[in-house]
Image (cartoon, rainbow, N blue to C red; front, side, top):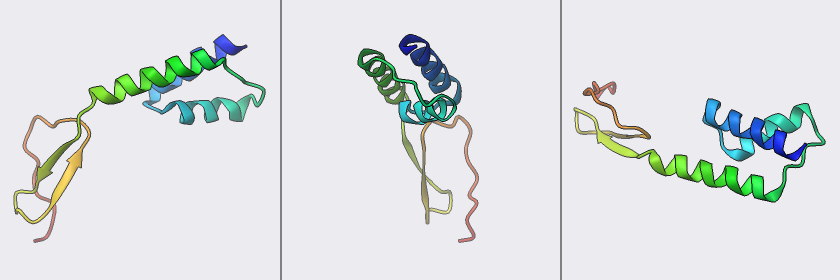
Length: 85
């Protein structure tokens, strides 16, 4: 049962962009007996860290100059100011 749980958790992590914990809790809610092997957990966690490092956090300044906001992935087009300043 350990390997199949790891496959399902890995699939949920990739499909839904979840952390290991989020995916594991989701599976555990349906089947409380799940207990993946520590090596599988480590591999899933390492994959999550690798995926997280590929994302870049970029900070932009609003066109009005009064506010800033952060994005996880870079936006190609210019963003319009939504504030009322």
